[in-house]
Length: 619
Image 1: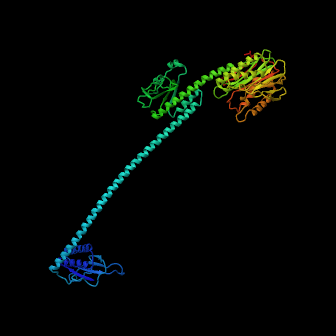
Image 2: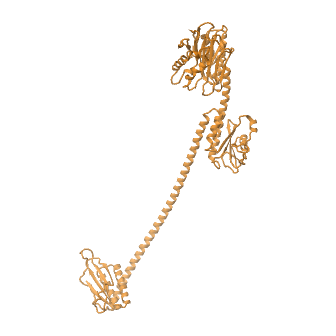
Image 3: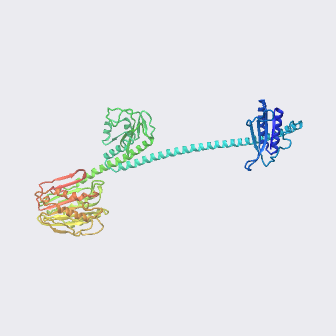
């Protein structure tokens, strides 16, 4: 279908517009599409009339070229020469709409074609009413769309509000999470710092308590604190009494700490340290000469207290500007533990001095006997007090015989030394009445059992008679003597010994005799020389016999030899693998040599070592 309308004035334009609206309605075009088509056509026709030109409107329907799809209604405005003939120019404007269904494309609908040149009033009224209906329908659709838009706008607003609330909740949750992470990091850091302080305190306490020398403890203390927790450390130890306290030049805060027993902090600003009193800044530096003033350096003075007694004052300067409060608490606790360690060390040193004095007082000066030389070596255990229950002795009996004895009381320390002294004295008392070595040990056994039922001892006694080449000996639970004869042969005197002294058993300890030609060497010793925990005692006795056999005769001969030196040459290889957790005693007896002219007694200082070679008065 193709229809054409010539447009020369507004009436023609209205007629063409009405025809286009009717054609679109006849073909079932929707109101909205029809209104859009008619509105666009009206605007184009108005523009054409405004220019004073003549144009033609062509309405046509076209089927799809491929036979598929929908037909279309085209509205084309072309210029016109005024005589009904086209100008041959391209269309000035054109548009189309899809037809909703199959349409009759054969001709124009009734009342639409160009034959309706001048519509009457009825037709105009009908066209106006149709246009009003379309406008009303459009307004309804517009109202619906506005309501839909308002609904969606409200929905979008609600969605935005929800999104904003969600964002606010997420922000709050994120902030809470960040705060939790920060608190966790702070707690972890605090826990790590606390663990570091506790570890340091435990390690420092172990180091301080591992020593029983108070000077070494002081060196350890300053080494532990500087430079990690203090720029400098000074220890004021009250070793010389109140007189030394008054004579020393010390910071005022240290003096107050010594008097009150409370930590003091001296600085130009409050320290805020828990358990510490604040004081004005001090003009004295503990780590510098008295003439060196440093009022700008804070001082922390902590008393070294033990058993409610102030032993001294630890004065510290900070490693930086000031101390962390937790570090200050740790330093105060460390000072308390250091005070306990120093007090224990001083008490140990005091007891050790008493013990060593007692030990030296009990060491025997060996007597002079014609044809017999004696040498003794005593080494106390290196662990604990340098005093034990081992002893040696040599004295004469009324008949001129010489008694030599080596014994060992179980245990260490002052108690063992006191019991050793009592046994030594009792043995000398029993020997005044005479008696063989076995008889003396039997009496000593009864004495110890009644004196200390829970204490035991071992001993070996050897008796030398003048001008008799016979040795009489007896042992009670003690390692056997070792004898070297003049030909260099060494053997162990392993005859059956008696049981330990003091055990709840009645016993008569037997005597044993052996030939003793001149030039023989007898070794009496305690188990500390030969016994090792992992090996037992027998391998040690074998090593002793080897060491005694290895000595050259010149080392033992009275003309050139030094018996004390020979004892040292035996001890050196015997003790190189020893843990020195037991006392060691060695007594060498050399027959057939002239005795030395006088006593030679040497004591080995703090080691407690005593050596005697020669003669001396009976003790």
